[in-house]
Length: 307
Image (tube, rainbow, N blue to C red; front, top):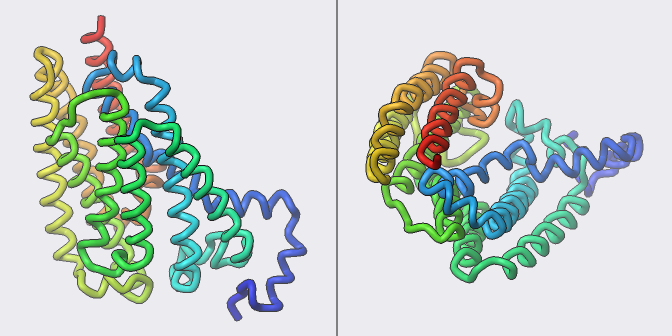
């Protein structure tokens, strides 16, 4: 029988040491996924590193607001999806579906996180606070309904990353770069669809209702299309920056960008990976090397241009 708060079986929580209960509770915040807040800093740093460095305080507050907001959304999702997650071979091990955290404790954590997010919003410029607020509103809507709509679900997830990049750009006082936002959007749609492909291939459509509208061949095609557009947007964004920095950055980083894309496609379509893009990036050696060299090359050009 699955253990829930309403079941007497949850008394087994009393046998879990307090430190492990706290660890399970904190896991609901998904600290491993805080790396997804990177667009807040990366977008302005790549666009204009000197200007971004001069806005460290508002950028730090913006990042903190997004981290708190994303953790709030994660807890809300886990609360709503705990029954469905028990059907997933990996997600069933999470703190709520496994019974290591009670619904009551997770709800209290949700309220605290929502309060922290609201407090941080009051410290941000009005426009930036509006972007973060839009992120929260869209993701709550996603949790309640949009996650069940095919293609809309991945579009909303990608929009969350676009809002991060947009907020960071505005917080640094920089002009919005449309090609950068297009690149971020398409890349994140591809990663989200890669995750859907992995779920469809591994566990079928029982875990997520939107999966019934997908097929593996369809997802393969759409992932490739979005990665091609993302790469084109990346090149157009860099090329449009101040010369010679933009042109040099484009030429130097292009091979690493394409290799990272190729490796991701290989992992998804050949190795049947892609279930967690963050884990793929951290654990896969070739992916880590490609992304690391890409970042190093871009940083080298940034530093050289600032000297």
